[in-house]
Amino acid sequence: MMSANEDSFAAAQMPQKDALPDFIHDLPCLDYPDRLNAAVELLDKNIAAGRGDKTAILTPTESWTYQEVFEKSNQIAHILVKDMGLKSGNRVLLRAANNPMMVACWFAVLKAGGIAVATMPLLRTRDLIPVIDKAQVSFALCDERLAQELKGAQKAAPILSHILCFDELKERMAGQPISFAPVGTWSKDIALIAFTSGTTGQPKGCLHFHEDIMSMCHLVGDRLLGIGADDIIIGSPPLAFTFGLGALLAFPFFAGATTVLLEDGSPDVYLAAIARFRATWSFTAPTAYRAMLPKVADYDLSCLKACVSAGEHLPLPTFQAWQTATGLKLIDGIGATEMIHIFISATGEDIRPGATGKVIDGYQACILDEDNNPLPDGTVGRLAIKGPTGCKYLGDERQSVYVRDGWNVTGDAYRRDADGYYWFQARGDDMIVSSGYNIGGPEVEEALLDHPAVAECAVVASPDTARGQIVKAFIVLSPNYMAPNYKAHADLIIELQKFVKQAIAPYKYPRAIEFVESLPKTETGKIQRFILRQKEISSSSASR
Image (cartoon, rainbow, N blue to C red):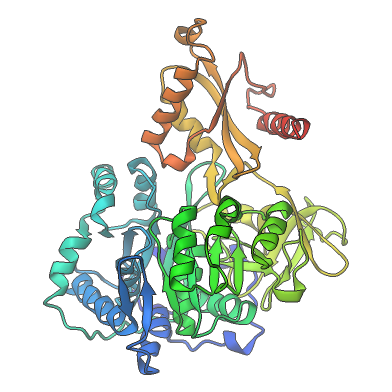
């Protein structure tokens, strides 16, 4: 593969050809030229089309036109190259909430030929260190409000040599030219590394090309959803999630539309923003839609024409309640960081309540058994996908787990009906999906085991009506904490929860803790987490 990159680290960490999935390019819109820069396609082409004065980004306190995004991204690109010494192929960590500066920085990195490594705002120092080390990140652009954790990570990962906070970045921008000649990247040059946690808790970096970004725009934003220039898009997923990147940056800029960015996605703020900005499209997780239901009647949502739900399974009661409250059918969708965005969904009259949907244009899917053989309709098995995008882990042996016989095997259990609709059954691994966040149980276990009260622990998903799942920890106490005044004591539970919040991202903390005498184990000493998961499922069913 040809590359324009001076720094070849990321390209060298690509999986070998025989470890890659099969890629499908069977639509004319996917025939990209050899030279392609996604920032040019999404931003600069809007300027060329005469949209410079159109509003590109709205927030509760700001409004940026396409021209402003264009000029500020160019100024930041100059700073990256001239002041910070960025070379094409260098990785740049981006750390901010959903705001206009985050968008401008993302565009600037791609224009300068860099690779964007966006991180979720809630990540702590402990979460950031492996991201920096694994991606060998030397540069970071960071909101001041999130700088403390990043600077803490820098001490343990000194390869991060340059951190530039937004306030100083804005000062430097004042003297920079507003034009910039974008690097002529190749369509298959790496544009971003999106990190996701696996069941081991160790982050996996998903490599995506410039053409992958454009593929999700063509196939999801355009062909599936039909987002147009007159639309106003709102959503709550972080731009560090590829779900949020597509919904709130790539899709609206591809269409020449307007995006609404919120740093606070709580129900009242979100609903008020829909009404205030007259948003036409909403993108968020099922739990967020459910949380908004009691307040929907207080706001004028007549501007909404469609709502997309992704990030976790959409329960049928949530679908039905949202339709009753708003008259809108939620568009369900399953995607994956490995695939960059949604690959199964349905819209309009094709929506079948309870089903995720059908394979979207450009992708293929099947249900596999444990030996990677296709299963007949109506049989539960492992969901497998092929398309123009696919899993490309950054130097990770888990590539061979996700990619099997050319298929991307997502780890989800599904069945397909005779009409081609796919129905979610369960997660196929130890990942806990809580309010749209993916949480690796072993990572929480590691944090808990640092506390002197914890001798052993196992963390599993526990069903929850509000969040889909919550993190539950089963803990065997250390001998010094076995006295009656400690065992199962509410104060110790609170102490452990606070301890985890300080160690890793706060949303990962165990919302439920149960103290036990012992954990179920195999003869070789391995903890049998499936027994604990089944216990939680049975308890949840019995309580209904």
